Length: 333
Image (tube, rainbow, N blue to C red):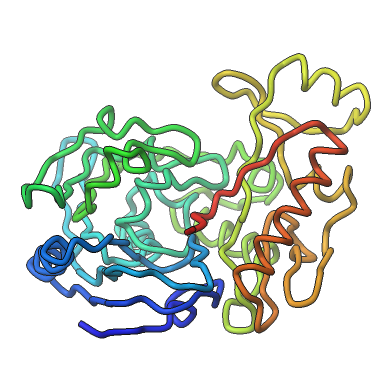
């Protein structure tokens, strides 16, 4: 346990004040102890994975930040499938690489996403036509109120687009300890996403798809060693059919995807082609020149500067399209 730790040093956005207390949990027993420490002092808890989807405030966090570093991966044969289990602290991409190396299908499209296994079901991470909800078998979590463990089925997780039960008021009482994934031993290539469909594969395997995804991502996302970023900062909006029809008349090339309760439109297209914001910047904060969904901190930005910049982007999109866009990144008060 450490005190007064800079959160800017723990996140990929490289922004944030200090955490009053900071625990690195190497075992599940450490997680329990850190949770009990916070409960005894009536302090709030924030669980930090890879720090790749969070914007801390300049004031920092007044409670206990727990960074989970548990490291274990195992597999169990299950007929034509394999159940892959990974503890919360495992790097997400390390798990993907391990599963792919075993010839297992289901995670290859999700290659290259930063963060940890524990954060994956909370956010229902997704990319290139795949989402975690399609492969999660169960989630084992700790109830911070009681100290007891609970197993959540896929249905219990209540997955939605970049959302889950763990983001609800009730769900925030749980710390994810381990996730079990149902992976296929049989070929199940998913190259329906435009970039993959156009890639030109000579053969389809988990490794070839992973390699393609990593190559495509490398052209769309900045180098984390050079700039601060949380990846895609905004969600792709889901709008009504009527709203979409109106926009489609005005912008005939506007792409779309069928979605629950409406039509999903790619915000990158709107930011680039409709609002002309690709590469737009104010001081050290901007939208990445190769992918406008990605917000970058080129050095020294504050959380306030980022929030002000985001508010400006939201207003431009609202004025141009009537769409209210939302952050995908968790923004702490």
